[in-house]
Image (cartoon, rainbow, N blue to C red; front, side, top):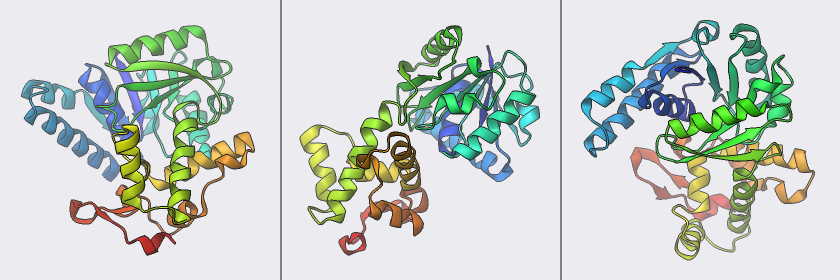
Length: 295
């Protein structure tokens, strides 16, 4: 198991590719967008350079990590020799199920198929394939090279041997794997997203401001990042998508996305990746967005 294919060269995909490559695996990074692929590789190189400057890796280790990564725009070519595929595409059920249907057709028979979904049912994704026992969730945390957790999610039909293998593999790449079952939001986002949603509700109803809400969680609850800044970091569109999956899955109003979140996503204010969310990130200087924008 030394050939790993990663689908999607965005923030999560290139982070996953970086992590496996740095651990000595041969990684095939796949994206239909050639520009996204090049940008993903540049991001990996930039992150490795930061690690080099901090003395965490050597110049040789940086080169070896980059040498371990190959780029593909063809899904079929990229997965030909893969023993494990980790899908890290957009958090959309339609997109993910389409990818898994294709993977089932083009991957070797014994290939394990993992998804980095943060909320979508593993069982539902697995049901689109003829190998549901070989489908599992590997929910990495952002930034992947730094965050130690991998939330491993069993689908209803996931084989025990596949689960055991993924748990051992996670350890091999320096992660701590925590096993959970297949329910909307799993554990991480089932707990986190209602908190973020409530923070947005608190802001929208005028209880307090962005800086104040974040400060209270950081100083009073020892959170390294406030919930609104964290939402910006995750992506407000991703937060909305996860809440929608949970609301649909549980039919419980406590998971209903706040109207402010919905409106911000409609307006294209997605957080750090769009340069504005609850904070303004233009010119790489974080600044508070005026309070009247949230009322």
